[in-house]
Length: 81
Image (cartoon, rainbow, N blue to C red; front, side, top):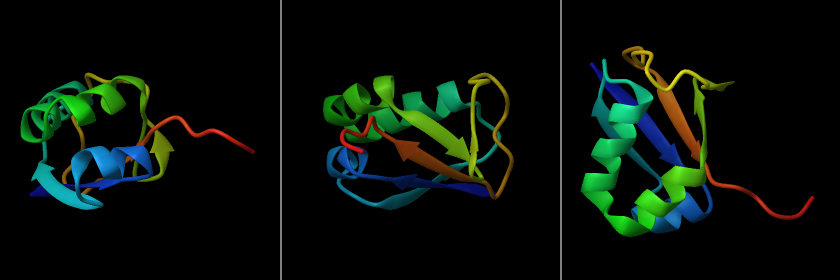
């Protein structure tokens, strides 16, 4: 089973795509390491400061396994109001 990773704003620009899939069963830390390898330094810089939603809920435990079929939203810091 797969995860869906969706990128927003600066994360989308750094990844070069708005959405991609990744293997399920990894933790958020493992997923971000894989995404950094795929996309390089520009995305790595965004991932270090981004917030993550797992199926619409803020993810605070970066070591917990991500559930199969989940949607992970990568949200870089936003300016403005």
